[in-house]
Length: 125
Image 1: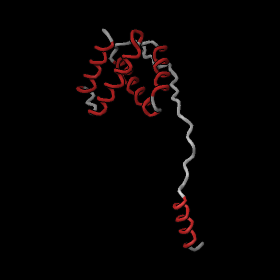
Image 2: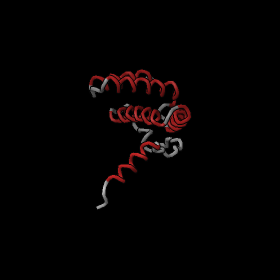
Image 3: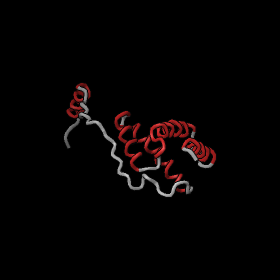
Image 4: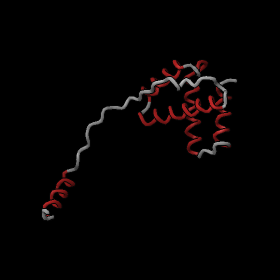
C-alpha cells in the first residue's frame, strides 16, 4: 500500500471512528500531505523523520512545527496501533524544536505610572 492510500484510510478513521473536529481534520490533511510530499519512499525510517524535523524547523514557526509533528506522531501511533507498521519511528526519536530567543517584554510607561500612583494612594498596614 502506498503512503497516499494509507493517509486516506487514516483520515477516514479520524473522521468516522475518532470523530475528530473539522478543524483538526483539515490540519491533519495539510500536515500529512506535506509529510507525504517530503518523505517519499522511506517514510517509515527514523532518518526520514529526522530530515523532516530539520526541514520543518528551517521553514516554519515553532508553533507550526509542534502542530505538524503532533499530526504526524498521531498518524504513526494509529498505524502502529492498527498493526499497519510494526515499529513506530517516533518511539526512539528525540524531537528538538528550535525556538527563537525572545527579548523580555517591557511594561508601557503609562501602566507603570498608574501602578505607582495606585500604590501611593493606599496606606501602609
